[in-house]
Amino acid sequence: MASHFFSTITKHSLKPYFLSPPFPQNPVFSLLQKTSPFSTSFLITKTPKKFKKRKKKPSPRTTPIQHPSSFIPHFENLANRDNFFRFLIRSKQFLIKQPEHILRLDDAGKLFRELGFPRGRKVTKFLAKHPLIFEVYRHESNKMWVGFTEFMENLLEEEKKIMGCMELERVKVVRKLLMMSKDKKMALSKIYHCRLLFGVPEDFRDWVLKFPEYFRVVDGEDGSRVLELVKWEPGLAVSALEREFMVDEEKVKRALKFPVKHGKALDLEVDDVRRLNLLNTLPLVSPYSDGWKHELWSLEAEKYRVGIIHEFLSLTLEKKASIHHIVEFKEEFSLTKHTYQMLNKQGRAFYLAGTEMNWVVFLKDGYDDNGNLINKDPQVVFNERLYRYAQMQHPDELCRDSENESNGGNEVSLIEREERVSLGKIR
Image 1 (cartoon, rainbow, N blue to C red):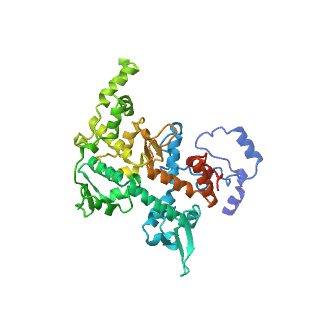
Image 2 (image 1 turned 60 degrees about the horizontal axis):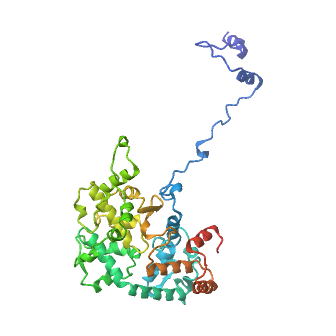
């Protein structure tokens, strides 16, 4: 009887049962349901997560610190130039310290940080970009070595003569740095790390010992070697802003800006706002004073720190410095972690170029409207020549370059040449 019961119940005899009244169906869906005998439940209607394109988050390594609308091209080009020649600059400094100015190629491939090329890349690729500067040769031991070309060795001798001629100027710069510092002393390693900014020689640690009337080397609390100021010189304790103030008072008044907060209800004229702001701006605090004693977040302390950065940049060869170089002297100059915000408010005096992680601050007063240094140090002139030679691919280009120089010629400027190299117009 049970078998008879189950045999009488068929699929067509069952009726749907709803706990509540059924929802009205879309007529289109009901039509498809009636006409299509196949199920579509196996179709994937959403893109699987693994196939979705991930949105790249902006990286501080590549994000410009300035908005494109506020770019000053010649400053941005100078920042890009330093990146372009990073391998050249670091490799030159590293090889100079090696015996006979040579290095095994196998060792060079491992020293990507020291030589300034990306990890995982072949060092030979970067050496080939500068054939007039570097050469690779095989030694009798069948090992490959990297060294300078004979042309580059001659340039290094020329650079050594320039440093000899500018020795007293470099001494003055180091003395002024010590006079600006909080305790009138600095770690030798910090100045050595920033030696290219100021043009001091490679043997800086031994070089300062030649001037015992100005410097004293002592042991620091942590065992490091510290450079100490021997004698204070009042004639050196005058900042670039103070000297400029004697020549062009109005220019200095416009250089920095510390605005006074006031309500809009005052309805002040532009000239009145300028006069009101001058109450805050002047007098400036000398970077050679004891400004570090002011209350940390006071207006006087901020004016002191701005003056420190201004004077620091004025002592550099190219009137610019990377944030990493400035941070080296954070304790000595009593700087805070808000240095970027502080400089960003002084757009008349400074320009920040590069990326958020590695930005460079320029002293605008050191450059003309075309982005050229107003006063070029002989070391800067030498560096520009080196950059020009580093882009040449054949010795014949040296002859053409010397002809252009002798004719006062119309050779392509360095920045224009870099732009063409990036576009592949110059090989």
